[in-house]
Image (cartoon, rainbow, N blue to C red; front, side):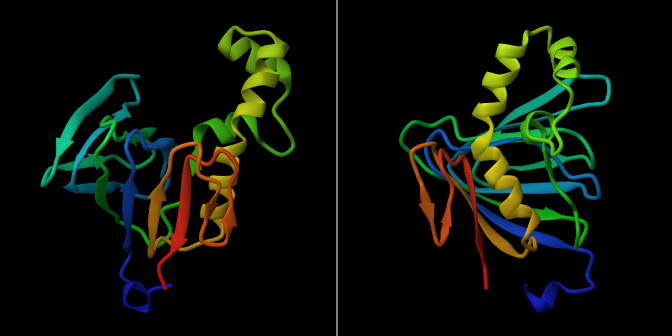
Length: 178
């Protein structure tokens, strides 16, 4: 909701990572992302179409590019120091699909046999994984309702309230920037 970005084909976000904060694996189907680390340290990476992991440790001032449509993540490996990143995407509507939520919280759900055969697990393990993605599902629903002209705050699992959003076991909270 930042009018200055309308029609420019651009989305920008500030991402605050607490110690050990994680932005879980996700994809942007309509945009390439460039991330600038302003402070702290991040481990970042993406997985190519031939399943090769490209990973790096970033320090303040470093840039990293996540190609459009490829799964990627960011995590602050530090146990005491926060990290701050600025992310730019080359689309007003980059879209986002959080991988755990897409597989284990689809509505209606994927057939259990699909997940069992894909991961080589039994139904009790499918059920356990489905239950464990509650936080990322909450994150995906918040993201789907907002524009990318916002701040993103990454939190550890113990945080429950961010602004007016209640996210149980939240890994990621979106804070509108208006």
